[in-house]
Image 1 (cartoon, rainbow, N blue to C red):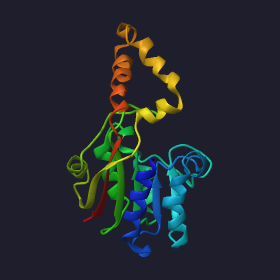
Image 2: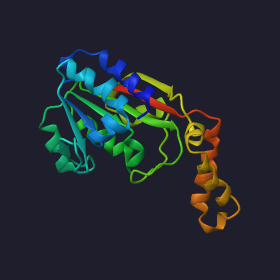
Image 3: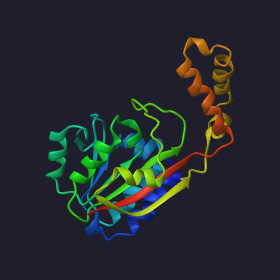
Length: 219
């Protein structure tokens, strides 16, 4: 999660009273090492303010990791029922939809967890290179396309947000990574898919990463 994305999420959450949010499930949460150490702005901008408001947050991931409260797979119906029994009023579905084979099914499972009036806060890359976790389907929706997934919900807010960073920032920090592209350029036949991804990444030397962000209310 980018810092700009975390700041947007904080503003979106602040627009609702605590009773509209608690308990909130953070889907695909990763570990507390990531949220508090690797990307400390996630905890500072999102979860620390929620804690200060008394909003109960449960971190959900399919992997057993430090700081994960509930291990569950959102593509498994039994796990969806188990999470729904917790009575969540809101969900954070951040940078998750591009990592599943059926984003429409995941969106429906998200809504299945909530009562009428429940809230889903969604972020997903709009302009960003291929990144596996463990897969990347290259799902890069506009706000309208994202709205088509959440057919049983009202879109309350949507924006394409500039991240304020790009691949050039990674190159400034580690300039030697450009060697990968130079070495791969003359040999596309070794792995054409990898070659295409490597060449495509150079686009973001000039272009800013962008994220589609939206808030949905279940009907």
